[in-house]
Every structure is written in structure tokens, then in C-alpha cells.
Length: 399
Image (cartoon, rainbow, N blue to C red):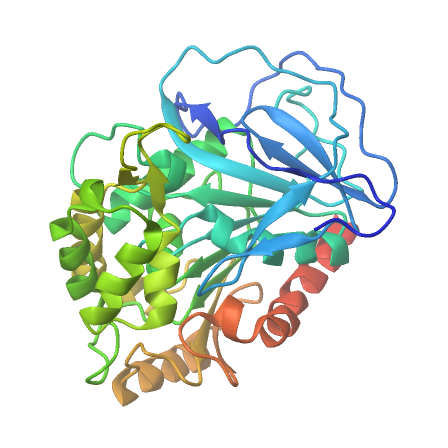
């Protein structure tokens, strides 16, 4: 609902932009400058499928479960810049949330440096919108920054983009590297939740460019190596993915039926409701035929991705941190993810031996939070992450 006296907000309905394949990860070349009118004070901008849409700071958000993140309600104002339709195949779908002091887009003169950028990566069975309200809050607090919210392969609006080869942590990371190369971004901060945390580490492992130096990496409630099962009664991702693959969603009449089926199969109500948000109605609304649904994600590909998440070991990055990289691990106090004493000891040992002046390893604990850190304790997570953006903003000011 809109605030009293305000014009009714318009929901973000445009499809996310698919970026063309990057020709490579080489430094940007000179180009032409595209003119655009820029946001008024106290506004933010969201880039969606080639459009920059202005959002008022007072607009409210619509919560989703269990992460209760936002699908941002947008005001009607639009920036009058429409790029030409891309001719190449897409890499990934994304949204770009910009603070009100950012006056840049990827179609401007390529000699103009990009503003400080953070990439936010979701976990298995999630999407970029999981970070929506949190990114908006960051953009309000740090108006010089922009935040790239990505739908990883097989998820969200990237699920329809065909990918060759295996669906792995490494291939997922390379997708994101291609995307930021195409957009001419050099992110200062990478934030990955769960599966997305390993993707962020793999990005550091694979590329010197387009990652900036220094770069700060946040791995939220994930370890670099072995994925350990939770306690009995917890939701196990492998079992959830297998159950969803067997479910004939085309035969259900409502999302509630899917929720009921998941709860009956002993999955938690929160996870069941969250999973149901990934259903898309296949039959036209208002048709006389019975409604049918389909998943917006590629479950076969996601099954491969989770297997890779279990198998991928990136301890070598943590125990031999590349120069100019600072890796932060965040453990949720009530995490479903099973952190072993061995994991904590190895991270603390890495903290002691990482001696680069602009690099290192650090461990954090988020109190009063389960695995869904940006939902269970968003204020605590915001306080912890804010230190990174303040440090990076200060460093940027000295350059």
C-alpha cells in the first residue's frame, strides 16, 4: 500500500535485463557517451532490462517469505534513456540498485570510471530479489555506491538463458565475471549467501580482472570446503530439490497446494512458502481452464549446482589469500549449516597468517540469526557489512 497522499506506486514488472556475452575480461575500450537525465535528490535508481527507473526513498516494499526481502515498489518517474536492443545471447539477468549520488550507467563514455560497486549473490533456490530491500537500504545509507543483484544460472529470470557445459560453482562464478566485464564494472565488494558465498570465492580464484584491488569478500553462513548436514528435523537442500523435481506442479490448482504438500513432507512452513514464490502461472489469468503452474527455476541444473557446492573445496584461497583480497566469513548463531570446530580453527589460523596490508581473513558471528541472515537479523547484518562500505568509501576518497 502507498503512503497516504502519495501517488500509487508501480510494481517492478519489467523483465530483468539480459546482458550480452562479454567478448572477454579485457580492460574497457574508449566509446561514445550516452546522455541520460539523472535522478532527483532523495531518489534512488534501479536498472532493469536496460531501463533506469527512479524510486522514491519513501516507497514501501512487499515482503516475501522466508527471507522477507523486497520486490521494490517503484514510483512512475523514469529516466529517459533506452538503449538499443542487444543482438547477442544473454549472460545473466540482473538488477542494478544505485544510490542517489551515482550518475553513471554502462552505456556512458567508457573512459568514465564506474562508481564503487558491490555484487550481491543469492543461494540455491533463491534469486536476486532476495537482496532487494537490503540493497535498497544500503543504497540509502551509502548514496555513492551501486549494488548489482544477480539471478545466477538456472535461477529466476536467468533460468531461461541456455548454458553450455556443467552447472558448477566455477561455471556460475565465471557467468558473473562475464556479466561484470560486459557492464564494465570493477566491484570493490562481493557478498554471497550460502552457495553464493562459494561463488564469490571462486570469482576471486578465477580472475584478477575485472575484480578491483583491494576487494572485500563476504561469505555469509558458508564454509570454503565440506558442506555438512544439519540436525534431524532441519530442511535438507538435497531432499528439497529432489522433492520439487518429482512434484507435478502442472496439476496443482494453487500455490497453497504446493505449500501444503511440502509441509506434509516435513519441510518447514517458512521454506514451503518461500519455495512457492518461485511458481509462475502457466495458464492465462481469468481463463476457464484449471490453472497450471511451472517453476521459474531449472531444477535439474540446480541439482547439479548443489552437488558442486558440496564437492567444491576453496580452502586454498582462504589459506593463501591473493594480494589485495580481504575475506570475511560470517557465521549465523542459529545456523542450520553445520559449522565444524575444524572449520572455525582453520579460519582463525588463516586470520593470523594473512599479513598483506590490504588483505586478510576475518571471522564474524551474527547473533540471533539462522541461515537466512538477511531476513532473521537484517539490522545486525547491516551493521556488520556497513563497516566495509565505510572503509571502501574512505579509501576511494583518497584515490
